[in-house]
Image (cartoon, rainbow, N blue to C red; front, top):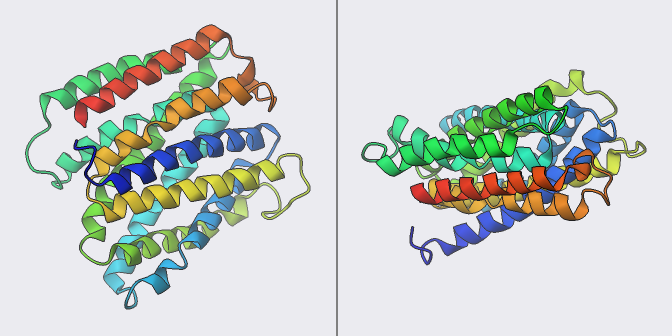
Length: 297
């Protein structure tokens, strides 16, 4: 990967990873304070969808039926991935879920080949990376004392979310460059906003409530998750380097672990009381995962 090529995309991905760490921690705090998971997903997606409304006016012409159809399909995948992400944050620690999401970079490489969007077969380095990733996942997800069941559930949900996001990231550049990328982003996230409305009957409390203990954290998480998604989606759609962009974006795992170590106790997060050994092991697993990701870069 040439560090001087597509530097704007890499900068966007790096910034998105940093902001994501803040969104994951504030989202975890909101869930711990009793905010409903479905409501947090709806709030985050509606804020994100609203951020892409200007894209309709930044692109020449109106969306075609083909663009709207593709956008709806990709928006559906995003909705599934986002729902799995917040479910993983409820089931597991943010300092575990965020690093595990780094497997997305490796899965993108596989999906690009499987879907025929990349020339050639999967190289040996990617298979090595996949094997080492299993070790990294074990280091990150090995349960803390008395939390084995919750940890296992969080691991599966995080990997499921990573797989859905990987499928999305492998498809977005292909379809966005068949038309105007800005207009395609509007179609994807405009559809996401409409599809998210389907979840309204299952929300646990008033959507725009601001009086509950965790409400301010839910709003902060929604805004941060939306902002990082805007940055990352722009990097993915406008530059045809999805694997490389995800390599940079995987830094969110390091940022989340550092934020939890620094702010965990101050924010009274449950994982703030994790032992130094667990935090060190997760950091080691995150570093190993970073090495795996570099193997495919």
